[in-house]
Length: 600
Image 1 (tube, helix red, strand yellow):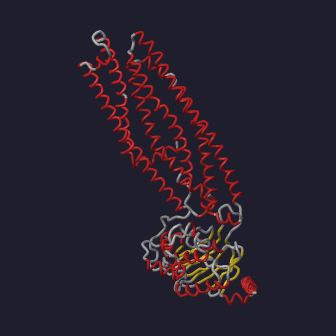
Image 2: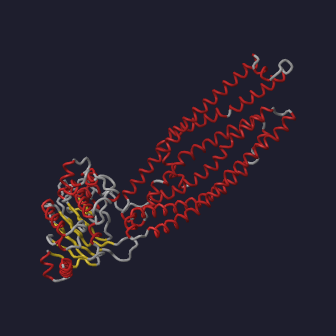
Image 3: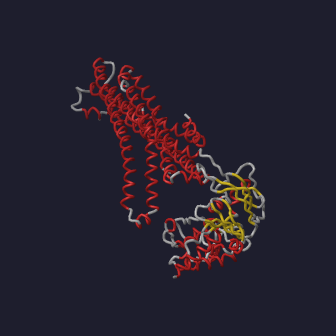
């Protein structure tokens, strides 16, 4: 019932057009029930005419084409054609209202899912497979749409058509109506049993489908690595294992569904046989006419689809509810990082870029140990600071707190004297240019990748950003220059080119604070030095935070923080840290030795 209530909320915005569609569908069924009536009248009248004129005409054709018979036949034919025409027009109008509104609701749900995904924290995407998220936003939404379209339409159709038809049948003959409807209770019991089975297995199948989609997405995203390690056969076996599990579960559900429709047809066929048998006896007794039998057979045939659609509707409804449970789980996921009532717009019209971390500790959800421990750090406006340390020491986690990709477990992060939880998220992230450790490029042109963070960016802005990131020359060497398609995840570019395009993407925003998370690791030291020298001039006056494994990248920073196991153990300038002969100095000496060995 909770699922029904939540789903039906989406009907409110379209209740007018849905009500109109229900009227169209009811009207179409009203005209439909008169078709057997006109057929019965025609048959009875023809039968009577044949009896009346049997001695005057040599064949049935002469009777039908006599003046009186022709007028009756033409009159009933026109009524029949007009009725069928009205039925078709109203049925078309039904689909243009009910089905179209279901597509609009599908559009609303899909947009709500995307909005929700954008608001969810990084934790959600770290703990949920991308394939599962993809299926919820596509496959599951499509199944939920069927509740608002086919399920709603066929439910209205079943009740209105069955109501009209059974009423007409009772008017003609209550006794024959009873015999015609005898199989229906058995059909209802069978449909109830099948619906429970389908609901149980549909949810299991959707979860398994998410596994298949996730595995496929992961395999194709890492195709270069798979080929490089010659693991095609291994990955194929892994995929076949998951796919085979999905196949077995789906076939079990398909078996039940394949039995459902033949059983429906069997019960409907039994109704027709009963009508003909019992109706024949009643014709012999003079209770009804032969035309009434034909009328009843057509009525039973008309009941075939409502009754058959009952099975389809129950089946589809269970699938829709199973998919909705998965979507609802996503939509009700708590949003940890969001604007609140305390959030203020335009806190500072002039942003200075001063950053403070006060007693900041952070622990990932479900983790036992803190990734950051009691971090205290002050970054003055326009200064350039660096964070170094071994892999896994907490460097990236630290800088992820500044644009509020995560919130600290303890302590607070302050920008320009205001806790970032009181900043408007859009404003906060607008003043920050962030180049993540893992470079991601979209499957579009170089120009669109660079201009990603700025609306209506001019070509001059794009070229200037590329020049500042020292990648303009590489781009101009391409045949299509800035219109070059980079391929999925930038597969057509080198690692260094991808990193510099990512830097250009951050610089085009003209941010007051820029975060470079090991963003030059894929370039050689000479290229790195050239880029840094150019950036030093372009980043003048901006608060710059750099993370790197290379001492050469950070040695010119105003302050260098050395992090180990989530704690700041050393801080100072390059020369000051070397003079202390601590962990930073040992790291520097080790890298010098590695460079010397590489030159031998």
